[in-house]
Amino acid sequence: MARKKIILSIDGGGIRGIVPGQILIHIERLLKEIYDEPTYRIADHFDMVAGTSTGGLLACAYLLGEYDRPKFTAEEVVDIYFERGDDIFNIPLFHRIRTAGGMLDEKYPATGLEETLADYFGEAKLSDLLKPSLITAYDIKRRKAHFFTQHDADKPGRNFYLRDVARATTAAPTFFEVAKIKADDHKYYPLIDGGIFANNPALCAYAEMRNKFSTDELKIMASDILLLSIGTGFAKVSYSYDEAKDWGLAAWAKPAIDMMMDGVADTVDYQLKQIFEAAGASKQYLRINGALPRDIDPNMDNVEPQNLQALKRFGDDLYHEYQQEILAFLKM
Image (cartoon, rainbow, N blue to C red; front, side, top):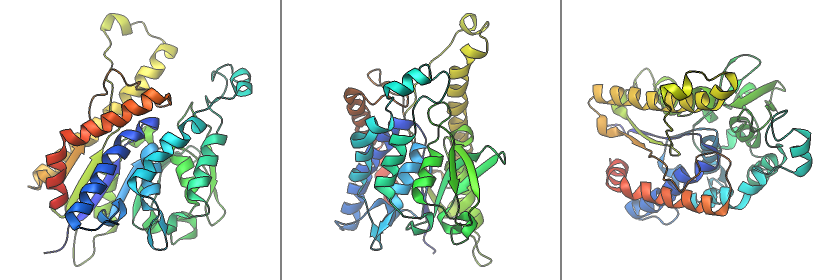
């Protein structure tokens, strides 16, 4: 019997990437115990890692290699948020004045984000990742989804600096300016955060696995896949009819984006549950997500120390809530 293909998928959510990052610290520790291997890493276990936005950044970090081994532990990956979050989401006074508080330009200059990505990823390329990847972005010039896939990066037109991959997938509209990045064939791509179409990239990863890794001898089906999908928490604010019926363009902007991203993520979860259930393999798909506690600011850019610690606690709590399901999933 062939070994099943194991996929890890991580949602977008800005600084809330601490939540899946914290869960994966626990999962990495659990894997070390299961395999009795103290150097075991996330990249050792999963055959593909997918991510959108902050999840794409995490995917790059987990899969980045050094001397043929994963460069970072899961704990070191989460440190990106604690050590550099205030550099990434920083508004210098001149930027605040020039942009009228974000109304006339993006909310944050990209300098802090780009410096952080350069420090962590250096000169590494997408082709240097240790395992297949699927990291989402959206091409505003060609008006189509763009997927960064390590397994296709042997072609110059599909290979990029890893820091540029992470810059593109985290280029959230209104927060950061569009990323303009160059492939190895010297073509330029203007890209924004893939969260506008796949904030939960799990279904994209499932399709990629079935399409790219099937062979004439072995067609990969749902029953051949184990898929772990981790969200960044949600805060579903409800609105009354009387409150929303007279909203105009400005009033609808933020609620519409929030509803769209939550709705897409929920739809992907629904579709995958149906797919795996129809294949008689419902336990091979595990979705971990939860409602954010009231002490957490759901905005993606709150880097106040108390909010970071609250996100960390929430990630710990989610892991313990799903611990038995996670253990059963990892042992399959």
